[in-house]
Image (cartoon, one colour):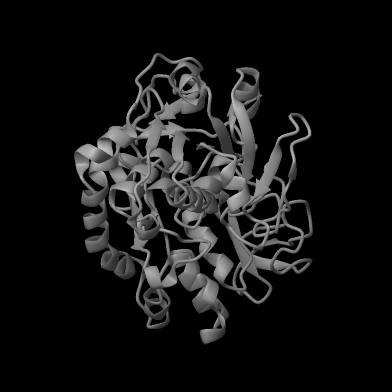
Length: 413
């Protein structure tokens, strides 16, 4: 795509004074698996972050007189107000709400089908994009839309489905000649780039773009890259506006004010998620159905561990792996936040469970390949390669990705 033409689409990238303060901490140095000293660095004081949705003067005038669709959920908050309510109270004509995985209120199980409905407070129809039928809005819905606005808190992982929903809607907007806007929010894992690049043969609902597991980009930056790299359907063009976050860098330690989904209840789970989510493609429990999701792992047949836990059915984890079975394994809550960030995608946990259980090729399911984004990593583990050796094979792809993404970054690295 012509760069000057592309820049016209992403403007205005408005720089405004903060309107709302969200408490954050900042990390003084990049946290990566190869930088242990940086992980121990002293944390300086950062300016307060202002999310894009809080910059009312930057985006509300651009929406007046248009039929607006909003992709959001329970994370689309500005203080104690939802972005939907802010738009409606400001006289914006919101015709449609799009809801992602976990639904508009963020309470549905992972992967659970969520039906379309109506928002009780505003009466605006909610078009679910996770109803098990299609992840593209119908032509009837698109006819009543001029612009689609995204305001949702992502966590910066290739297999976290919120960005996939955004890409689906960008495709729909491009195909139907609509505009697109992203009210940007920080990436809590924005300091890290790690993991293998998705082999597009394994494109799925948990992997939509040729990016690494930890891509280190905000949704606004990712949207810019999707347009600029021609990743949308047919390489289609798309008028894109990003309202950026103020006072944010990729090293800002942003603590989420709202849990992004039922099984990511705290920052420890968010930082360990790049590594522990891979257990979804195995019979090993990662703590769904406990108070420690994504912060432990275990299995009834694992040997040599004193730590144990028992998953039970609960809201957000109605049928967790190894439900009602006593599991033995590892408590990762003892891992510091700095260490969890520094390790990036850590395959040591998967390798430990694989070797301990001795299940051979019954250990991995096809879903593991979809999560990791290839069929190479599984073979490398089965062949006895160490986590460090496997990570070394990712580096050429990561170096190219860093270079390719550079023109699309909105915030200092």
